[in-house]
Length: 309
Length: 40
Image (tube, rainbow over the protein chains, first blue to last red):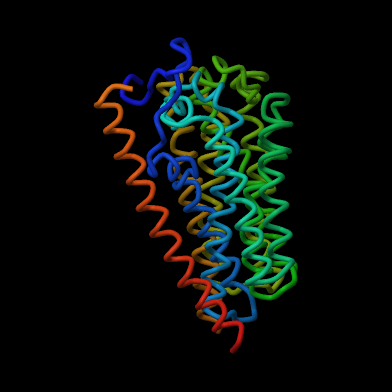
């Protein structure tokens, strides 16, 4: 902290951070989360029936990444107080004192406005509108409204992370259809088991910060049951594009296989009785596999499209 | 501000200025490419 702060000349008691490094601004955009957002957006675009000029495709993906980065920056700006209370987030630029809150706010608002404007001018208005809705949904509905108020925060808030394939598809076609709607539903239903698995083995962090995540409010057992229950419709939505004739056997086979593994891991979590966070191996396995699952499903969708083409 | 703080402050300002210059340069190229793509 000492290396990152100075005493201002007008007040000996007021401590302000030094000007933040560019790496701190990059960290504010949560680059690892952005990877998944960009990947699903790109896959939504590649799965679309119409092609798009490569420069405009690059611009659309860049706008999705910048929009996701803006939402992450505004999320961290609003949550810097609870981030400071959790081990997992305490080293982020704001709680660690490497950046002042105003810089984070200006960066987030500027980046978000720029991403929507660029998408609207360079690609099309529909994709820009969905991008704007996704940023506002994540910041206002999830971060400001739901996260500190209800254990259903990530169920509804999960919609924000489900928009990228819809945006990618809209960027390529200028419209939305059943397949991107199912991809939206897949990420929407995937989010609760993914985050609840994480929140089970870091629940003391959430409890310390006063965030009403499901394991903190309803307990470990109820959360495990909910993970199993949400996995069932997720599996159905994941496989649905194949019998509906929207994809081929490459996607269908991959969806059946990966969803079966996901379901098996969710059942292991559901029947686990361990309450010690450090010993929650099934929950950790489900969390890490859920990330591989989403990459695998969207990768299979693109592979399927390329083979059909 | 102590001399070492001053040096650190200037180092960060310089690294941010360089990063901003690279980003702006990249956007100039991107906007040019978008204009060409749109005209086609």
